[in-house]
Length: 312
Image (spheres, rainbow, N blue to C red):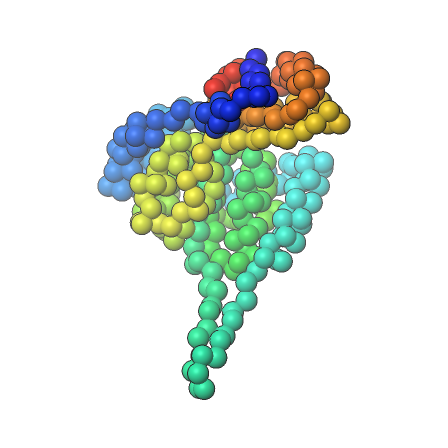
């Protein structure tokens, strides 16, 4: 399932031995161009049309009703709620320590230069949801924005056919715990376009354009962020998830295998790499990967990621 590369005594560049997954960014840019154009020209109807075509479901409304968000919070399993609250607390503590303070330098008598940190006014937070559920993305995007003092936060997440066209209830529950009440049932490039241009909502009201978009997504989300950079600010052009584990024969192969799988399940282009001087550990991890994959919900996706050129 996962190949083995023996670099002992070899002068080959590891970056050549384990190349990154091939991504056709140009093709992705071509595919999202009409989506961005139609959302800019047609607004909400184009957003809904592309959601139905690409996600296989047309959400009942673009903006998720407050009642839906409240019900999602009420329906959280106690263990999930406790884990989310703990994650929120830990994330908040870390970001509180990262807050910047204004500094003033006296350059000449009576002359000063002040560096001020001013929060962005409105931020759009993308939370993926097409292949798995990532309430962690809600926390990792919302908490630092709140700590920074952003006054207006909006979350977008793909509609789910299994949940009536709304985002996954755990995503909505995490938003509720964080006090985010402006949530839209839309994903993909059409979500980024909606955040960039703003749209009038069919049921009334409006999704106002944002100043900045943050959060991970697939190659089409990344292509849309690249194309709209300048209309909006973006955090980064994130690629597929990846993990590299450096371990010796003291490592537990069960834990190493679990870490590899936890990233491989994200995307077929995800890279999962173990670097070890121990043949015994490599053997044990290979066996453990096969055993654990059989018990996952995403066997095909993990298998494809681990079999790709980007993993070893």
